[in-house]
Length: 201
Image 1 (cartoon, rainbow, N blue to C red):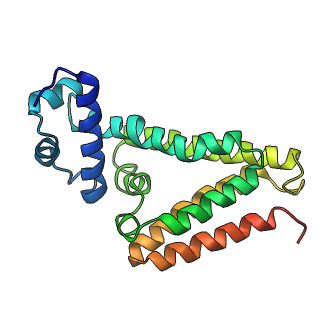
Image 2: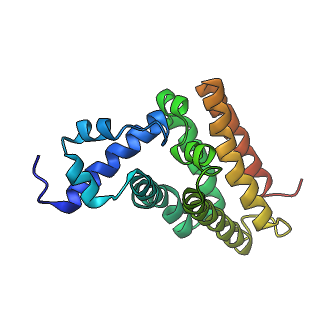
């Protein structure tokens, strides 16, 4: 395998590592399987990542976070109707999440459950992502209030925490029950909660 294109080598290693971590968790992830999937040598891997932990942290920062930002953060930050965009995102995930994705769970959520209690560097990297998500939702709710799309009396900070925690709760429960229907029902209820933010109850 030609490793003279370092950016492409790094990207392929990270993508293969994410897939392996998603299937088996970080601790059980096999470096040998990652190398077999990419065709690279140990030397190529350790040229980019000094150890397995560095590889795992890079997966969070260089693969998971940019993907999440592109799918959710950027569209929500630029949406003309933030609350409608948030609701649309939830309903889109409700309809498009595959059974295989639900059965494996969210890689972020999985890593939080597995690694946050064990390693402060993993916990810090995952916390940064959680805080960015909360802040993005909070800012969107603030804008929605300013646009009179959301009720003035809502607390954007508390609502953002509830929304973020609920999304991961839906994914976690659905994974535990191995049930796509559970995931869809839970996200449908969360979309209904967003509806309550738009009018007096």
